[in-house]
Amino acid sequence: MTTQTSFYKHPDLPYSISTGISEHGHAEIEGYLKSLRVQGFCVIDGVIPEDEVAMARENVLSGRQLLQKDRELERRKRIDLEHQANSGDDQNDNPNRLDNWHSNPARPPLPPHAEICDISRCEVFAEYLAAPRMIEVARAMLGPHIRIMQTEVNKSSRPARKPISEDQLRRRGWHSDWPHDLTAYGPNTDQPWKHCGAVAQPFPDVCMALSTVWYLGPEDVTPFNGGTWVVPGSQKDPRNPRGPDDGIDQWSPIPGEFQISAPAGSVYIQDSRVWHSTTLNQSDYERTGVVCRYAPWWLSGNEFANLHSGGHTLRTYVPQDVYQKFSPELQLLYRHLAEGEMDTLQPGSQSDAVRAQSLRHSEETAGNSHLVVGGMSIEEWESRRSQRKI
Image (tube, rainbow, N blue to C red; front, side, top):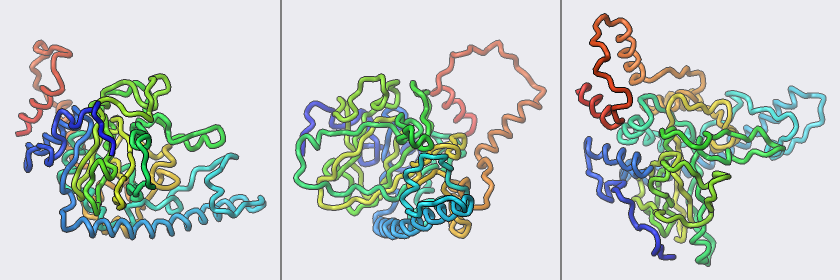
């Protein structure tokens, strides 16, 4: 394995319990939030208990097989719908032709003919997505109303073909995640409908989404078996590895880069702006992984982003019979995709709105002579807000 002598071996702050974050309670959550805000990432150890990891992994592996059958049926259904709409036209019945639309492309229809969400076939694993520590961190970063905008269960790190050269080990693939992926998932003149959009540079200094990788084993994550490369603090840099005018070689190592290590059952969390890269798995074993993206209510995935949901369109749906089996906490994360359900703002957002409305009806006023506009930091505001809630 290549020794990275010119790069930092550890980030400046602990990013997990294993690397020094205090365990349990408020201090633990604050440790994750500090690492996310300063370094752009953290790892929550043991979200899935050690004795439950194998069960979660098997549920995902069997779910993948069911989803393959679902995708085949969905493609056939789309072709049948086109036959019905254009009965007089000569139609190509090859299911793969939908990958190469170029003439009057139509978005896939809404449920029930859209694509079933990956989570619908992984109901055992799904409940961990609403684990209390994960939800507390996500809400602190994104606001009280959060939802999962992306679910991809086919994200394993498979063993690389041997032998592996030094050049291969030094190769990167730096990028940020949607909505900050500047390639917009590969649009071209023949397939403009593939353009999913991206936030324009320079990115606003706000966390718009949290990408998560759920490590399901059987091995722990190490640099040797493909731990994610990340550049700590890169979420604050106005440049981007895929920025066309930024002069960054997205295929080469970057000073300060770092590789994640974590036990199976943990979840890696990153600000979608942070620069990161996959790497080769040098072991002989596949590591099972699931990718989910947590986002605030205002980040829309309905109009664009056709390809990054694990299938053909972001317009995925959760069948009603599956949704009804979800816990109430998990339902809140997928209600916007649930068949026949109306998504409304979650309780935290509702209570904030009620408090704001009450100010409009207040007759009391102390004036604003004490106010110095621009004189309060975000940290001071958060501290004062926390004190008032006690």
